[in-house]
Image 1 (cartoon, rainbow over the protein chains, first blue to last red):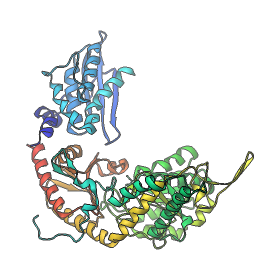
Image 2 (image 1 turned 30 degrees about the vertical axis):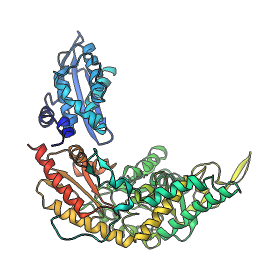
Image 3 (image 1 turned 180 degrees about the vertical axis):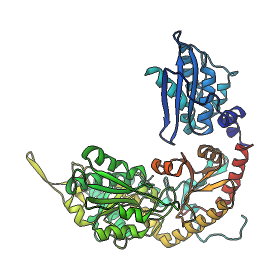
Image 4 (image 1 turned 60 degrees about the vertical axis):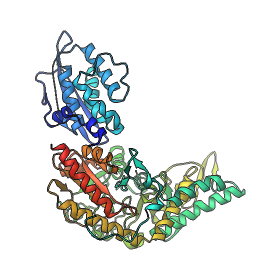
Length: 144
Length: 410
Ligand SMILES: Cc1ncc(COP(=O)(O)O)c(C=O)c1O
């Protein structure tokens, strides 16, 4: 099989694409945002609960999309749960750099991270938006 | 190839891009002609030649280059007139795209013939280009939009369509060939409009290069298409309109070239077709479109259509036999387009997987989100064929599909 395809669809991506974790809606939640990819119609709704110490206590998503967008959302919720908001923002920055091929000086993510599995998206520029949809929703929710 | 049939037409060599290797080793199989067609050498060389040897602005100066440019631009209009069998060159307006043509009609037709509460009939299978310009009328002026249902076959439900007319219906706008299903518009839809004396616009984006177009026989009042889907350049489109309507409707944009006489108090407008062509037009692209039409005529539109029908039928029959494939739009005759899904695999995955095999297909909602909602899917994969495709390519595609299904369901 082609290397590019194997890099894009690592086992963990296929797994999370088929069975996304943290799928649903947080109850209660105090932050939410919709993610939407106008190019293909994929969409998701992200909800999370930010406690008074600015820690993401719980985070979930629902939606429909391709394996890349579902896996990215699923892995994102796993990674961000329990994180302080400042750390989560750094992860957001690192992740967007990682999938757009600017992965030289990442601050908090490293090759041990499951999110690193999404690096293969860099080989498919048209798919970067799939991988970042959930993350932009997260960023949007912080701003609202 | 698993059958002994080959097709008569082999024009691959006319399209230089088809010798490109994808990812340095895979032969390109281009199955995305419905999004945009590839360009033959003649179009590439002739547009080059225009810039090298004849280029200037059109209809402005009196010097030699202006004459040469104007000749080419107006000659392209003649070719389009013949291509569509319009009565006169005055009925051929150059636009930048089909999209612009629809916006032009929506705006200027409204201005002349409509008011708040008047109705427009569209359908569920329309491209966003044939929805949003009408949404503008609804949002800005209180025009009422009605949408004809579609049948599972992908065809417009003619009875429902017929039931939508009232004495407030002012115009109908429908796709001539669906960019999702590849199905042709039922001719009855046009005759119903004729009977009720309501003008009809046909979105001919997908039909212009894949069906024989005769606007007089069709009996439509407007017909739009884009040059880039008919083997010509992007940036040029055509609006056909009957001289009657085009004469009555007001100009669309203001600028140079569309005026008769200007003083500071006002202006009179140019005659057709210049009235609708404000500003310097995409003149080289217009010439390129003319050359593309010459190219299609040289091969023969009948031959092109027969060739594409063979491939479409062949691909349909193959896909129809595969149990993990779901084809959208029933058993209707398709014209060069097939939409499908691999069960349980998102169309994005299919498209990326095929891409590394050198196969270009479209994945997504095809700018038809209301239709996707109706189908209950959020995207489909779409195959679309052009004059340069072959049965061997379909065979390779089918093998790749099996590999794809295996990969994602492992
Ligand atoms: C049926 C249909 N209508 C309209 C359009 C819009 O064409 P363009 O973007 O060239 O204006 C397309 C092309 O995608 C189409 O397939």
